[in-house]
Image (cartoon, rainbow, N blue to C red; front, side, top):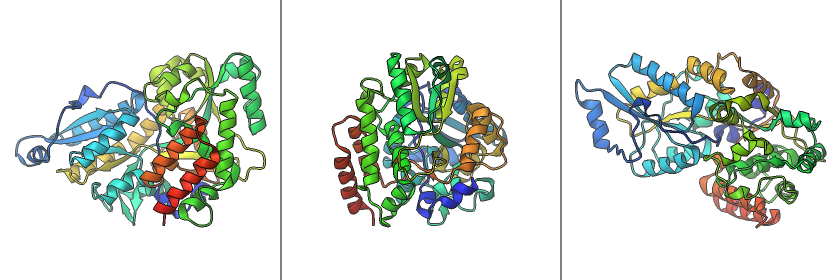
Amino acid sequence: MKKAVTSLTLSSMLLLAACGGAAPTTTAGKQDTPTNNDKKPAETKAADASKPGEKKTLEFWYIDPGDKEKVYLEAVERFKKKHPDVEVKTLQTPNDTYKQKFAVAMSGGNPPDVFHSWGGGWLKEFVTQGNVLDITGKIDANSYVKTVLDNATFNGKNYGVPLGLSITMVWYNKDIFAKYGIKQPATWEEFLTVIDTLKQNKLMPFTLANQPKWPGAYYFMYLADRVAGPELFKGALGRTGKTFDDEGYVQAGKYIQDLVKRDAFNKGFNGVPWDAGQGRQLFYTEQAAMLVMSNSIVNNVRTEAPTFEKKLDFFPFPTVPGGKGDPSDIGGASAPVWSVSAKTKNPDLAIELIKELSSQETAQNYSDRTGSPVGVKGVTYKDEYAKRLGVYVDKAKDIHWPYDQTLPPDLAELHKDTTQAIFGLSMTPEEAAKKMEEKAKQILK
């Protein structure tokens, strides 16, 4: 991690975030889960906090299903044993629905006490509105990897604690690769050869569920990094010479459109939702051989298709001809980051809950059972995916964080819109880059 830390600019460290996906699942009713119709007016929370002899109540919202959810709920149980006078109501909501539901709850003054966050620009927006509790000095900062903790630090104040560290790779079916004598590609030319070989054998090279737009952005961000290096985004964001209409971004878009024209993706990919899981089913049923995704796919596989795990493997995104990006550079994100609402009636208890949700015990369980590196110190990686991904993190000269969680909201949304349009061939890379830079000039100072 040290090499990656030293290469990050202050702005990127302050804006670290993530947008990893989650499969749909039933809500966590095991713990007095509120339904979507359950309302929580401020006066009700006040009553919960003030009536003697009655249990205090905390509401906790998160996005992850499967083993991740089980790890969270076990942490909640440990918290409840320490605080028998507290009831914790939990609610799991798939990623894209969660973002909408949470924004409505915040704007309506009715947010959960403890909630899943990605840090960065997403969290900062709510911090700026005064809706997130400042927990500076209330947590042990030395318990967390500084680079990851900085993801929820703004103007020297902390507004969240990290648990997972998500790394984006090219995930593939190693049985298919073995059957057709395909080796892991390291260069773009080798990458195209893999795609052509798979197509010749009537297989979809990639499955892509790009209706929510962020899955396609993984390709765009990697290609921009491979073409022009990490200073492209950092310079465009910081207004230090680089711009969003830089030729590096145009070239990244051209690479994407070349893949689309080669039929590298499943039909109708821009209309396929991630949360519903259809795209992943193409992977599990061996109709598609690869996908570019964060290591959240490990949790998806273990939840949805556990027998497929023996076929699952990954490799780094390939280099491109004449590219300035270092092959060790990787895409990463911090998720979940646990934050507390400024409107909670029980701030001390809510802080104790996020401490339990990001404790060393919770982090060890999270890594062991979900194949993920973590942002909590003192964890020994035992899971093979976590071990291998941890090596890539340690060797990375730079880690680029998701644009949609780093950029200001309006510019982040335009980034997703234009990237989806590039994939859909409805906008040229030049047009997309021009729109991004025009908006950046309005928003970024």
